[in-house]
Image 1 (cartoon, rainbow, N blue to C red):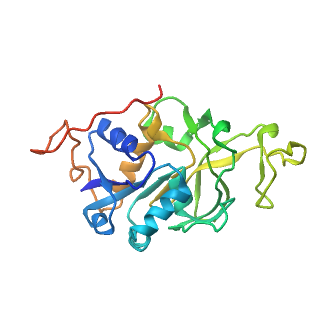
Image 2: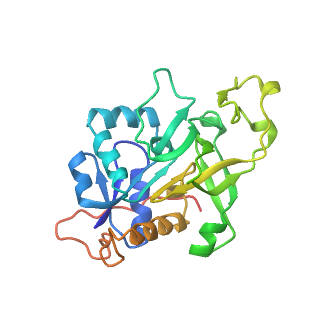
Image 3: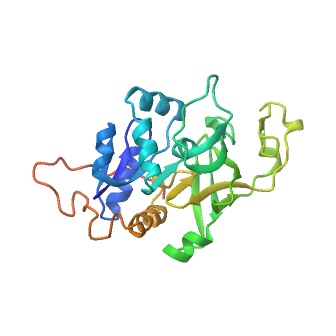
Length: 256
């Protein structure tokens, strides 16, 4: 079966392109019944509040929660990580609905606003041990969340060492600090930016915006290990074995 990519808003096209570079077909998911045709799911980065409103409008939340509950592999990047968290802080007034399933607390905009987006080299020993390649992974953080706390069953896959002058929030008190009041900012040595619990993967950064497909390969191996899918059952991407009458997808530019 193909890999589903929630396509309500955000960087779903970029995820589908990354899967295509690995020879696997990604399927856009916009309706609950479409989840029946995929064995794994990626929830992309985007604007989490907008995605939540669209998911509620299309009645996606019950089907998404059932998908997670069934133990099927799910990966959330940035906004997708927020979706999968059991608890989120720093939300807009009124909050937003969550899918849940990942035993952690995230801060929605831990690193600040859009202009405080950044890239950083991350130490990713588990990824390197499985996928090879260079010892670090360049994470693209765009108005990114961070994981403040994790439960005992959650494996930490990557952390980011935050310069004390850049820290905006307190993870110990789980309270938002005023961005302009940097004198009162709580210094942190590091913050969690990638986690795994069972068949759920979460990254605060955007692997789909880079040319490095190791996180996508890692997720595909997770899907294979569940028994729900095997490498032979993954549908080839367009351009590998194109379906008759199916419109080719133009690949998208990525950061090198």
